Length: 261
Image (cartoon, rainbow, N blue to C red; front, side):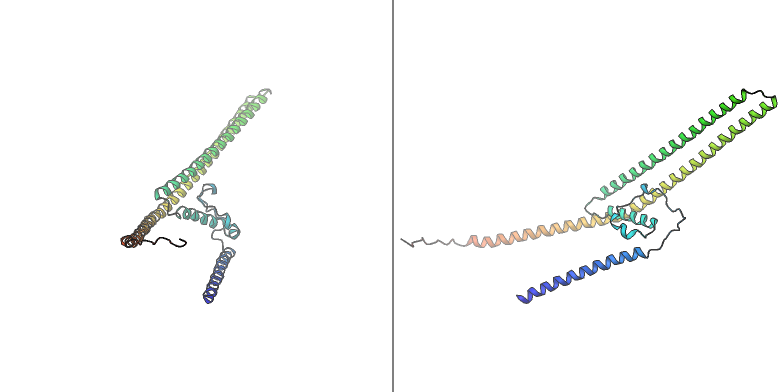
């Protein structure tokens, strides 16, 4: 008995030692990866398709200390992969529920994007409207001041030609700014649509694999439940058989207690 007890203690100590070593190796490996990670993207290269707040990503706060030396774009890519992994990790959730959650998240991202686009357009239009009002007011003041002065026909002609040239230049500049703004908005819209399309394709591919694993897990759980039920029935059957033997035996009549009589 003493030898068995010592062996169990030794086995427990060895398991604990191996467990600690494995954990140290794992953490050490992560630190080395973070320390020696080399930038994958050039610092001056714009590889971001959409603003970070539209990105699908998981909460990675626990690994920030290890991630500080990893390029931002690689961090974002890892976060998005973690987001997908989290959605596909719980095999107890029906595939339709997983798809519904993904669609809901994508709809919220789209609503946020559209809201920001509309806000940017309203702000730009507000600025241009203010510029037109200020320009029109300034030209009116210029005409008023000119009208107070005596001028020749040539001077008036030159003045109004100058006024008209400034007006044309102003509105041409406004149109150019509007065109540049709309081009930028189209690029952002295209980038967002490309991003959401790519993420939807990625989700669909992972979802097919998840559905397969879900069905396999569901079947395995059903088999385990069936085996447990059969085991319970067999145990009940064995108990019934044992009690049946006891029930068939003639009862033993106990002698009356005569002690003390």
